[in-house]
Image 1 (cartoon, rainbow, N blue to C red):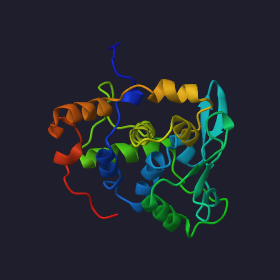
Image 2: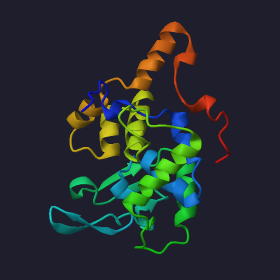
Image 3: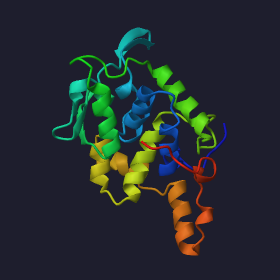
Length: 220
């Protein structure tokens, strides 16, 4: 097995690359799915609709816990229910366009109706196809394509770079302890290393992102 210097959490998309993938989706629903992964910092099972999987010889129901009422547009928060280890976390909206998209998406949905009636595997394909359409590959050398979880790693790194406290990132991601957050995101990512090089040398052409692949983003 090939050894990697970088952890998966250190090889992330740039903000521009993440937005390019979001705007390369085929449908409005698909765009909202990836926005939840990125701007909501959600795991794929927190976004996916209900399905039954076989695990360790028994059938387990997963997904299907994201409902229209979980988006509180009055308080500007999202309730992410039954996440890892069955916990629920409440996080703030961090992007106004994401909030507007979710408000529009859930406007006609009934209370208790899954926001995304889409299985985990389909979400993986939605992400993979949108990234391919944007001309963006997974920055981790051991990966064949962009996976949903890279958006969670990416938003954590982007919040860190923007100066958000480690405790904010811990609560936003739903980590059980700040130690997990620091062990995962306390190190320098590849993108952060490139930014430091650019700041030291003054040469920002050394920062790698998708600007040469797709120079202009479509309007949101």
